[in-house]
Image (cartoon, rainbow, N blue to C red):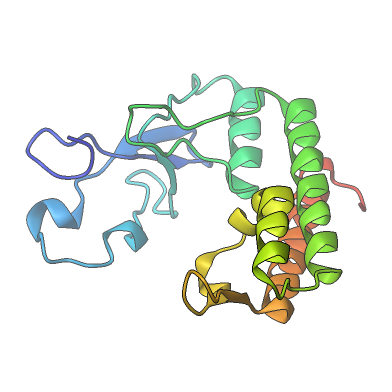
Length: 186
């Protein structure tokens, strides 16, 4: 079992100051009705600082491997952690700073491509236009969160302004993460 159950495995919390990881009992293990279990924060038992939830599949480097710890901190600060249910793993994790920068730049290009699509989007009107639009642009349409879409399946509309704001924010955040990682201006 992934999240619940007697044998549920616990997320790993990392203290970047102490270079240690800890597993914590989740409040949901004690109180099954607790709703904000993912927002639960934990302090390091050594220094008292807040720890970073690195996920279920995190394996910490040796305490003496400062380069690896700095890289793990860079990953965390850019939003890359080791969360999954254990079945498929956490997905791609860049192994060093240069691959992290390449990864972030690739994501930035995808975000910019999505932003351009939504900035120039003209909603199709007829069924024929909708069908052609779906065939040509489904990857853009799927990559937008459902809260920006309204109407029924046949009469679906997208809030273009919110879509542009969403992708603009994603581009800005990834640029900030690249800047943090490289220590330079983008």
